[in-house]
Image (cartoon, rainbow, N blue to C red):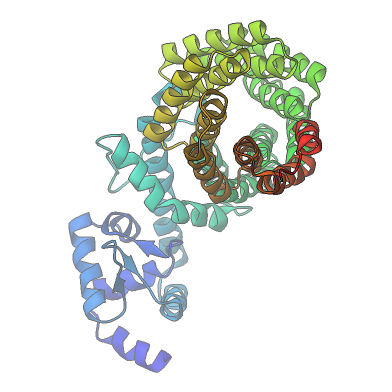
Length: 460
């Protein structure tokens, strides 16, 4: 095989041969003309011609999405050629250009998608060579989704190396994108790279940030105790580093996990501290997050008026900052309170608006939560067979992204529909599934399901 590759390689022109060698260093399994132009240090037009020449030489393949890829054996061969024929300085310069390109482009895409959070992300200067210019949110999101695997590969390639700063930066830059779009497994991988990279550099603040990011993903996955452990470790580090902004984020998310575990007093204590910090920092988004989480704690203690007050204040803040995803969560949580107060029409309105926001922003976790909310409200308002579809859609989404809490919520909702329609055995089956998940999460919601299981009576 290498003899065939060697023959093909010798037929290439010098610039084509150099492009092939450097592509052996590219961390992504797929690439396009723009990233290739940065790697090779030429124009995108010229890079496109070089890539097409390599396709004609059967050294590259075109993908169905009009990108390019290299067979695994050929990739190893090309990387070997780069090591043998490219000076070390040239290899490092090519990779640095490429890492700069992906880091800057990811930052630029996030600035388009989440402009209100720009101050929370590092300011990345443009590198040399071609730059991505995003015309709108759809363009930015498509690029992030297309290059998601490559961005993770850049982090893997640079973690705990002399280039570890790239893994750290990508963890902070991509945090919200991976969270909103339900890429939880990849988020765990990325933030784990960032923790290790920060430790290798002796960078305590970055380690605290990355531990916080990792803890919040564990919360999303229903790994509550791991979330608490990581968030407490992050808090310990951040307090020593005297970083009040990061401390506020950590305390806010720690409070959320504690309330999900049913530890309401310590949860409200952490949330209260976070709120004071966000007020001192004049961070309106942070204040909104904390107020909404406080509302959730009050709901679980059946303090519904206090819950509504905090959630409404949260929604006003999110509307003021233009934070659409967080508006969606506040809307959905307000809808859940209206369910409990018997205001079913208002609940349907809020859950429906939350679902629209989820689909507009691509927030899968919110979509699952809103669908469960609509299912619960419709079941109470007008029980019929079609209500199952809300929960079944929610279950499919929650399973896809690994959101175990919403999986349990969906099973509980499905059980409620079956029970209401007189299908006791089907109801038992889904309540048992919900109970299994709640117990594994350590969630106090397990008690409610145990009660429901005890009340089911077989019909003749």
